[in-house]
Amino acid sequence: MPLINKRGRPLKDLRISVLDRCNLRRTYRMPEEPLLRPGFVDLIEHFRHSGHTIRLIEFMDVGNVNQWNLESVVPSAELMKTIHDRCPLRPVAQQLNSEPARRYAFEDGAGEIGFISSIGQPFCGDCSRARITADGVFYSCLLSTNGTDLLTKIRAGIDTDQLIDEIQALWGKRADRYSELRSNLPARQPHIEMYQMGG
Image (cartoon, rainbow, N blue to C red; front, side, top):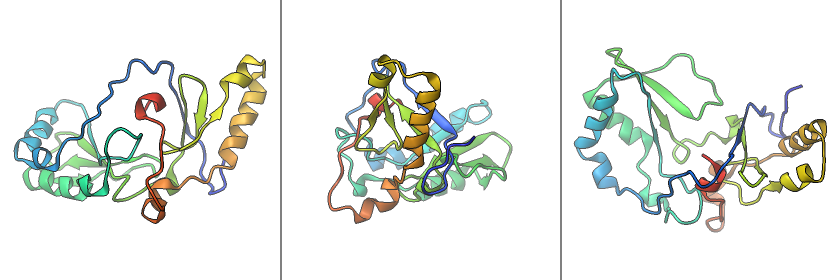
């Protein structure tokens, strides 16, 4: 039986972190200027014909230590135009709505590139992901401010069916739309750090 939330979104991807000590933590941000300098496309060129798909993610307000502000976001559309001017792109025809990256193929067949535009084009309405941290906390959104402790219940002896019911209940009442509502919120909301969440 599929797990469906209040907004009609199915839970398709439950990411479980098994260790939070193995994630790289970066507390700085790359300024816009180096990212858009001509050498940036050289990095993309390096991975063409390699079989690896590069995904470019707009600077996200995940966590509390990355000094995020909207003015620091380089929109995916700007990155795409810069790349397309040198390496023409076309949209990949078959894409899942729940997939966060919009995929593009190089017109010369040299591979693909993806753009995750959670700031410029929020995809909350199609999100089908939840996460469980290494310390057993369930989060229904990457940008959640609060999670639900499952580890205590597991240690208290709930069985697998009860755990599934608990996750189904949590997912069923999910109504997160942080990225869609960001500009209407009174102040920046605190979030769990990405290294705790597991990406």
